[in-house]
Length: 85
Image (cartoon, rainbow, N blue to C red; front, side, top):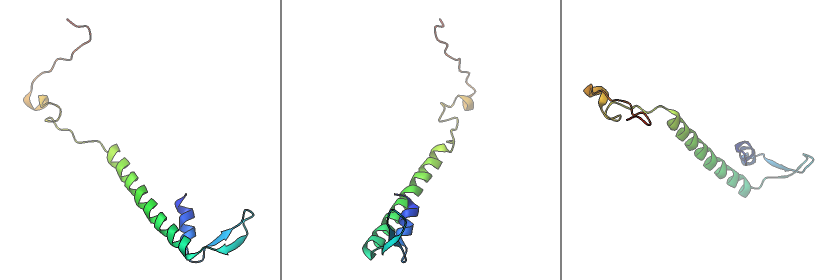
């Protein structure tokens, strides 16, 4: 269910429509309240997912300590080559 649909259903003047698009009955208070609650819950969840994606896409600050400290100590590290003797 889309947020737009739930928002429309939660309005005080919301109506139900038939397949031809003709208004047939107002949305009951029970359904309006349920739509409002679902809208808020989905919006919170969507915002949490967006924040999680943003934090995953931000580059992590990795200092020399996290990489083994070789840059800070001046130690030279030889690359390991496959098959080298």
